[in-house]
Length: 528
Image (cartoon, rainbow, N blue to C red; front, top):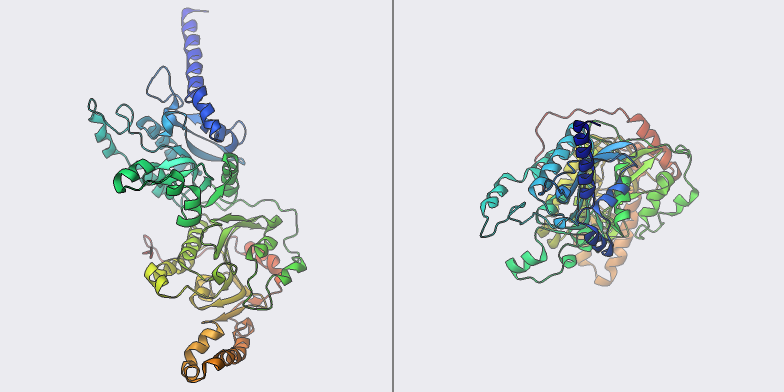
């Protein structure tokens, strides 16, 4: 072997040593500490995320020390999920607490650029202390080194780029640990935000800064844990038990989506017969008593393939159900009123929840199914002060603007502006049908009576009013039934509930190549 060959061989050996050093992250002690917290390391997460042998890491040699790189606390690259490429930035908590430093952000910027140019999904696995306040490799300073403070003036590209990627490629911001300050806006700008229970937290400031600024002494969990964001704020989409469940949720979510906005969503093989009748059990789901609640989740699972429904935000805005399913293998987004929560009335959170799903589906060519059983929008002084008109208008705006195939089924009642928001006739549904139990009206019978018979009721003895209202309501209710709407051709059909899957499958088939004209514009002025 010549001297040049020996030198080359030595350099190759040293290269592999450097790579292996970087793969060790913060070292055995910090990896053990990560495991003791019940968390996987960044690289263990990637092993579960991507199909075996497909992950290609970029800039593994990044770090402050050239001869001993640690990847600067960020693992970046791309790989395949069910045979399709996706990009990833995984923050490694074993290295500098997974904080965002200058080198790490150079790496992250590179993979964002590649994902957008190549048009495949972008995933962030977040387990980070936020921006690195370090005078050597971060954005902080001490008395000996103040020069790095100015570097912050040249940051923020991450959030601009993520905003511009939105609607072009699917964006996933998975919370597997802390994500305070800058890292909180990554999930905030993402399409899908799963959170690991009791392990993940996010907020614009961590507990220490909160205490310093406003004097509030609070734990990470109470400030921005998974319960806060999956049940109260609505920022989180799904609370999961552990890292493995979180990674699986990402894979499941992306299975409904195309790689980018220019593609159709992938159709899966379905072994059943989508044109067959649903089991007779579906006939007993809606009670005879129109005031009695029923399980809309059960109804959805009887319609979708294999009873599999991927629900979004299940613990927030419970009066609205949103998520993804398949019919005959075709992905479909589902927006359904939930009679078991506030009677299915649409309030502020329900409006925002439905709007969110509509925007995501419309961006990525996923057809929409509306299952309508809605008494209308929430009324009252509290609702008005909270902005129900603004939030409801946002919902209606989203339904009107959506150009994907839209299908509406009136399950029971569909009253007032709730009928509009759940894709009524005027909002261009490609299919609008009703079950025999369906009703369409400006409002319920009792509401009408409270207006047109107000003087009569006011004049009647109080003990007789309930009977008067019931008697008049019984006279009005038959006219609310969808039979009249069907007779006038305002809806396409009244169907046997057992035919629901067949009807939807046929609609998905005939709308595969749907195109629709919209007047050219930059964008609507959204009521937000």
